[in-house]
Image 1 (spheres, helix red, strand yellow):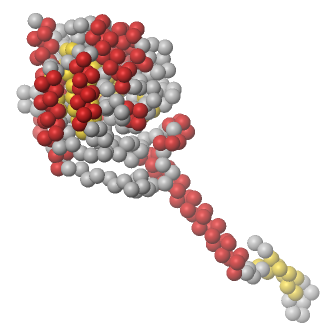
Image 2: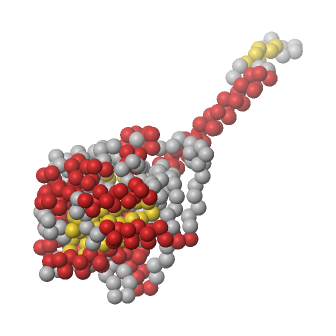
Amino acid sequence: MAFTLKRLAGQRQLLLLPKRRSRNEIATIRNMSAASNSAQTRLEKVREQIIQDNLSLEDFASSPEHIPVKQNKGLKGKHTLPKPSWLKIRPTTGKSRENYERLKKTVKSLGIATVCEEAKCPNIGECWGGGEGETATATIMIMGDTCTRACRFCAVKTSRAPPPLDPEEPQKVAKAIADWGLDYVVLTSVDRDELADQGSNHFAETVRHLKATAKQDLLVECLTPDFQGNEECIKAVAESGLDVFAHNIETVERLTPGVRDRRASYVQSLQVLKYAKEQVPSLITKTSVMLGLGETDEEVRQTMKDCREIGVDVITFGQYLRPTKRHLPVKDYVTPEKFDQWRQEGEDMGFLYVASGPLVRSSYKAGEYFLRNAIKERLQ
């Protein structure tokens, strides 16, 4: 603050008094204060966003392009589509609620990650809860909860250097499945590109522990990464004793570069499924496609043809739902009637099974119950 000297009347001493500021100086100070407050507000919003999206400091530093500094109304000229009535989820109650809470408690106590929780699946209450005469189902996510890739549709955490693998995880997973008494289980995993074998041997070991520990007729489905197309990694999982080899192609070829991580590709995913089938012809192979990202009917149809040409047995279709504002927006909501159309076309093409519906996901239990019977019939 500036001061001026002033002599008091009748006295020799001097006093320091604040200098009267001009209007321009006052205006400048006010503008600086407003700018400071605005910067503080933006900083607070960034902090809130990081907490809301469950981001670590490493995630924030390594992927700045995915983290908005300002809260805005989305892309210019784009409006958030209201969710239609057919996407409403029934609440989990009664016996199903008890089953849901039991599985949740077991998962937490053993430190096991599930894709149901990490990917914010809308069917978690229904699948974990089961129902009258049904077995509750959970998709176990092995090799940690942090992925080395950053697909633009996925809510799983990402990092270039995830924590090391838990060497006791195969035993923990086997114990959990044995405690639940399931007869069909789905194993999936994050991508672990930083590992020499990309986690394929860990995947295979988990399958072998399951087959050795759980009940004799347990059927195992593995929803795998693409392992960068490495044939040795694909073979290790395909020959581990699993019953269903699943790998998701996710979307049509044209949209793949903008939807999936740059290390994934449409052709590579097809090659993964084809090679697994070649190594173990008795395997049932399975893939999944999200709809509502801007694909055309002809593109969906071509994707189905491509999958059938390499011997894929099962395909599922579900509505893409945007997990957070940092992810790709929904282009359109596909009607239940349209999903029925794709189911019928898939069956006409010769797929062993087609699960198609707005809330269907790649490991949705409806497909698992059908596959359980289909696998047993094929093995007899």
